[in-house]
Image (cartoon, rainbow, N blue to C red; front, side, top):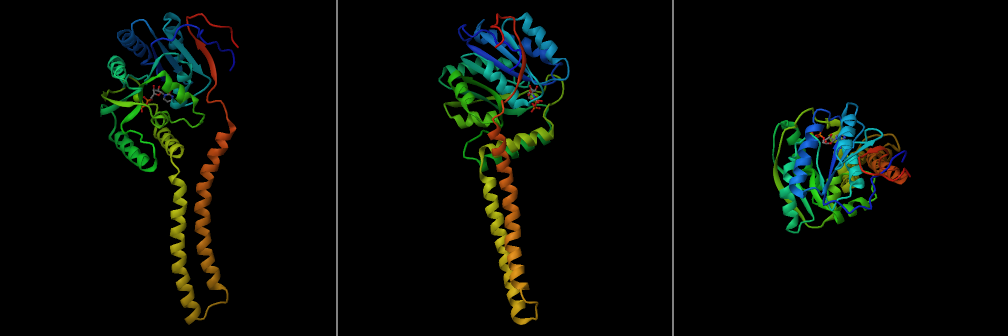
Length: 327
Ligand code: UDP
Ligand code: MG
């Protein structure tokens, strides 16, 4: 890390930390900070912090965040050196935050910050994770809700972990859950899947997902597909088994070809060696190609994991709190 300084952490932990990944959110960020602040006061009095993570925004998001953080000691603003994507921006904030309870929330106010107080109450009943479940999604295209629903159905078919449907990253977790999450070493971080995998006492909190307050979605189709691939390959080995099905299919074809070649060889005049060659070709070509493609995907992932790159690189951190000198 270059030229970064963290707020001193010999202070007692705040009761609540809110972690907000932000990418090109200049239209909403002031309103988000205002509503989050009010919601935190309602839920935890003065005892809270809000960690904004600027995920390499190209608009004025970082400028605005710096101003907010300088004016309000509850706010810490952190800027990543480039756009690392929602899941890693979230992970960066989670690593930095210090609260006893941690709320993950999007910057666009689709998840109402005012739900923090009732989610805290649900946690007081003994839950370790209170995750928001969308009962309704306002202002989202039929394509988005449809593809999301299909995706979760496929994902749950493919994995042993029960990753709940209609659940995003809007959730409140306790410090021990967060510490466990942060201890997971994997590089491809599909946060909601990892939290589901962790176990603990998890309860759903139904809510209506509002429309974006302003701006447009930062999840184009390409990113949604990427998230889907991360989720599936991160949590399932079923794709590996596809190679076996493909091999079975090829074997079926090879049997048919074998019968055809045998009959031709017995009753018709064919070139010597043709029958055996045809059968062998049919047997091996398909199997090899299928296996190679799938192995390639997994070898590629092992390759990426084995690099052990840092998950993100922090560029700078702004806070009005006293800081230790940069390491
Ligand atoms: N986001 C981010 N980095 C990205 C893309 C998105 O930090 O590369 C943030 C974004 O600012 C928002 C959250 O992730 O706070 C969810 O994104 P968005 O609301 O665009 O997704 P949607 O709600 O449309 O699925
Ligand atoms: Mg959104």
